[in-house]
Image (tube, rainbow, N blue to C red):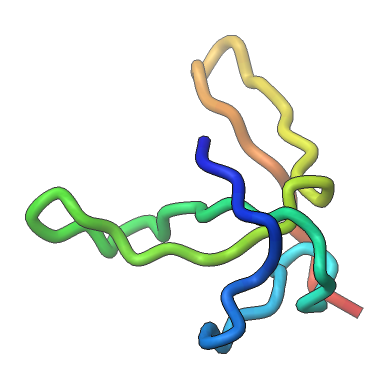
Length: 69
C-alpha cells in the first residue's frame, strides 16, 4: 500500500469515511468494477480512517463505511 503525505489537491474526492480533505496521510483504494487493462480508478482515503476487519471464512478484508457526517 503506497501512502501519500496528503490529499491530491486536484482531486475532487473527500475521504469516504470521515467526509473531509484534511491534510493527513492518504492511500488510494481501487474502486470495484472500474478495472481496465490492469488499471483501476481509485478513491483517496485517510490512512488513519481505515479500520479493516478480516472475515476468515470468506477470506476477505472489509470495512463498513457509514455515510459521512
